[in-house]
Length: 153
Image (tube, rainbow, N blue to C red; front, side, top):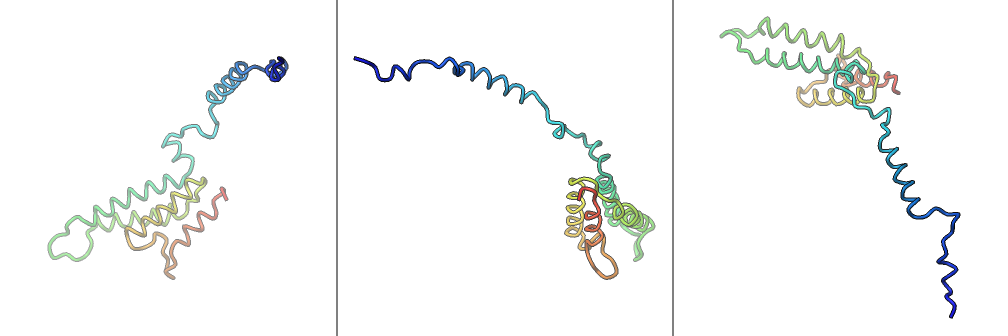
């Protein structure tokens, strides 16, 4: 009796065997795994601050804000209603930095744009007023302007 599947069971020498396919796939996978993408290189925190100047400006604004809050909780001498000189100095330093540095520094990366937007929103939620509030009471216009002027866009 003839076997009808004998013709199908013969190996095709033109096609690679299963072992050869597996070895080829393993070799190509190991090459891909060993290769490191250029844009996925880890970035040190100092390098990230240097990459986008807005990140350093935000960090300094946070530091000055903490100093301002600390100064506000220092007890004034009894009977004195006016702020102490330390409170005035901390508040002046904070707002001078916000107006002179933070609201003039244009973010240069997507991370910087996102960090500036997050910081402005967090500050508004915590303090009840916007960092960039102006006389017409428009909020976040200067922050949005900085983000819109980003070279990333």
